Length: 461
Image (tube, rainbow, N blue to C red; front, side, top):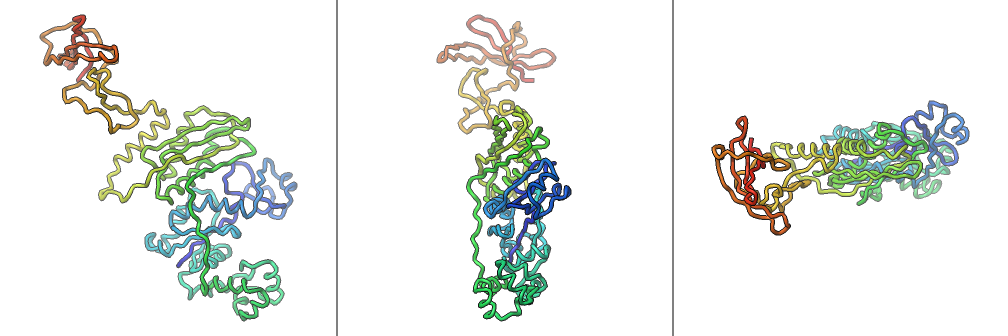
C-alpha cells in the first residue's frame, strides 16, 4: 500500500472560506492560527485575542477544537476522494490520508498522483502540503516536516525518517519530555533504543506507534464515507454587498459540491442557494442543469448567472448551499467523443440561468386538429407528445389569423376541411388551402365556412 498525506497548516482560518479583505484568526484561548492578512498586521500564534483585535479591525475570530477541525477536513475530503476510494481523516494533525497504491497506475505513476492531487485542491483556496509513504503515519509525519517527499517502499522508509526531529512523533507531551531528558533528539535516536526499554519508559502504545510507523504492524483506521446529503453554510461578521464579492466563497463551495457528486459517481441536476441578510431577510435561488454536471466552472457560471437575474436581498451576512437532486454519472464516453448534445444542453442551461425558465422552451405536438392549439410549450420534449400530422404544415403560424381577399387563381392546393372544437365551446369549420402570397411567399389560408370570410393563418416561406 502507498499513502498520500495532505496536511493543511492553516485549516482553521481557511475552512470554511471567509470574505475577502477581512482578517481571520483561530483561537482556543489564545491565537493558534492567523491568516496572511492578520500576520501582516503583526498577529502571531500565542497572542491574546484582545491584543489581536487591537491590531486589526475588522477581525473574524474562529474558535477551534478537534470537532471543528474534523468537520473542516470532512469538507475537503471529497476532493481527495476523486483520486482514491479510501480516504481517512486525521484531525489531530489537520491531515487527510488517501491510499493511492491502487490508483497510481491509472493516474500515470507517482508523478500522476501528485498532479491529480494538485488538480483536486486547485480551486479550494487552502494552503496544503503533501508527502507519499508506505504507511499512513509516516506519510503524515513527512507532510508536516518534509513536504514533497516520496518514499515508494518500506526499505527506504527508515532512512527517510531518521533525520526528522523526535518531536515529530505523535506521542503525548510527557513522552516527549522523557525523550529530551535521555538525549533522544531525532527519530534515529528513538529507533536505536531497545523496544523493551521504550515500552517500560513510554508505555506499550509508544512502541506500537513505532511499529506502525515503520510498517512492522498494520495500522487500522476508520475510512471516511461521503454523506448522502450535501449542505454548506457560511456566515460573516461584515455582510457582503455585491455579487462580485460573493463569488469568492461561492467558488470554494461549488468546488466542494463538484467534488462531492464526482466522488459519489453522480452529477448535480438541481441545487439551491439561500442568501440571508443581517436583517434576517432571506432569498432562496434555485439553479438547475438539465443533463447534470460535476464541473466546478459550469456550476459557478450557472449559479452566478441565476443570482445575477434574481432580486438582491441586501448585504449578505450568510449563505447556505444545498444539493437538491442528482443523476447517475454517464458511463464510458462514445468511441469518437461526440459531445454535441452535451454542448447543446449546456447552452440551454446557461440561457435558462440568464433569461429564466419561462423564456427557454421547446414545442410538442398536441392531439388537437385546430392549428392554433396543435402544439404547446414544454421544458423538454415529452415522451407522451401526440404524433405530428403527416400533412403539410407551415413553419410560421401567425398569432392571429389575418384577413385576406381571396383570389382563386392563387390557390395552389386544397381544400383540407377541419371541423372541431365542439368539446370546449370553440367550434370551428374551415377549409384550408396552400396559396401563393406576395413576393414569392407561400401562405396557408382558410375560408371560415360559417361566415365565408378568408384569412391567412401561416407562412411556409
